[in-house]
Amino acid sequence: EAAPTPSGPEHVLKIYLPRTDDYITDLRCMQEVARHLQQYRGDHKVVLYLPKDEFLVELEAMERINPAPELVRHLTDLLGDGRVTIET
Image (cartoon, rainbow, N blue to C red):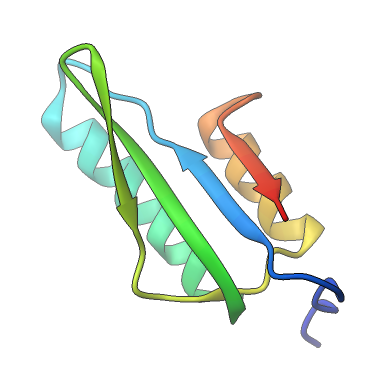
């Protein structure tokens, strides 16, 4: 059963991806994030932030999601505290 979608204004799920010296580890992390997002499709925007040098590159995902609490919890477990936020 699908989790209920938050009602009201559009939500934006912001995900701050980590960057390490290991390309394969980073790629696997991004693939795992994508897998979780695909399980919670919906009507709300996703913005990914990728570190590049001392800057953050902002990417808006093509997929729209349902920012259910379970999704946020899964992503936080994967990425760590402070790396997943929801804004309205």
